[in-house]
Amino acid sequence: MLFAILVKTPPVYLHFHMYIKKQRLLTPGPTPLLPQALHAMMGSDMHHRTEDFRKVYKSVLAGLKEVMQTQNDVIVLVASGSGALEASIQNCFSPGEEVLVCTAGKFGERWVALTKSFGLKPTVIEEPYGGAVSPAQVEAALQANPNLRGVFVQASETSTGAAHDIEGMSKVVRNSGALFVIDAITGIGTMPLKIDEWGLDIVVGGSQKAFMIPPGLAFLSVSEKAWARMDTATTPRFYFDLKRERKNAINGESAWTPAVSLLLALDEALKYIRNLGMDNLIKNAQLLAKATRAAAKALGLELFSGNNPGSSVTAICAPEGMDSSIIVKEFRNRFGSIIANGQGTMKGQIFRVAHLGYFDFPDLFAMVAELEIILAANGHPVEFGRGVAAVQNVYAEAALTKVKEPVAV
Picture (tube, helix red, strand yellow):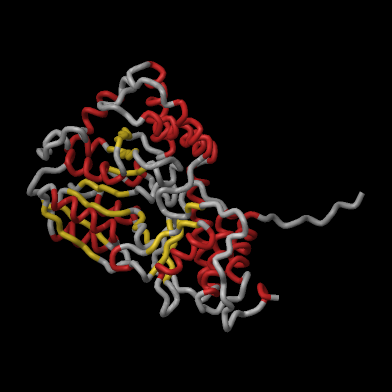
């Protein structure tokens, strides 16, 4: 009966783990690892200046172009995603140049800090956490200042669960002289990003997100417009020299010592994504995000970015009077599930559950069931099964076909 009634006065819930407690990673990065990619890493006793490695490296570069659906060159760097963000500035801009930065969260603020650190002069369009900058705002800024040399934005603002309208922005940026630089570290694999069709000049990704392997690799697609800009950019660069990497990549080599184990893993992950289809990987994230939003509403919880939600992560407001840190700790201590707290000014106010990469509906069924128990244990009225049922309904609507009437024989 306990699991069928509305909990009004919650009982005392001990931290009882049965006998086995597995750790489950439910964060927006790192994300769960693809098993065959993890296995491939064991073959990393390979010298990087041999033909065996060159075949792997060429396969990775070709695979990235295919899954990112672009004819532009894709460059791989040994770094976290932030290294590729930095490289985009070093290679394409000069100190003193004016640029436009769109920010509506913690990672938008990173763009502001990066541009300033390299001596650029950013005009900042700032929206509150949970919001998004509109294409109209970008258009107005570009019209007001024709000297802007670049536009920087997040595709998916993981700190809040919001997404920007990259297609809408591209229509106003591509007709200007500015480069359009997108942090798509959690956008790739969770939302459409038509790099060539939309004229996206630099699109940055990272290995530990939808690509299902450990942190340590960053990559970026680079348009011909961006390559041409590098001929006149004067910001110093050495390790993150994209033209040097491009030249070496022709022969299947990196300019510097590569992360061999991660490249072997990425090669396997790219095979998996190609077999699955990038469009299906995106649909998977979108369905999980839709189901999570439905579950949150069914449990009486408020979505943080309800007006412009993305699909990489769902940010949910903690119930009134409850610190979201409690929910994060309860997930870890009770169930071994690792979710994310809010970042920046939202720490303690929201919790975040990821959908990008190697996640499926059974992961979500379990997470929502855990959330129901955690909320009940901390005094929030819960009808057990209500949130899980919301997830089941989304799954059923998307995946189940109508049963045909049996044919008489």
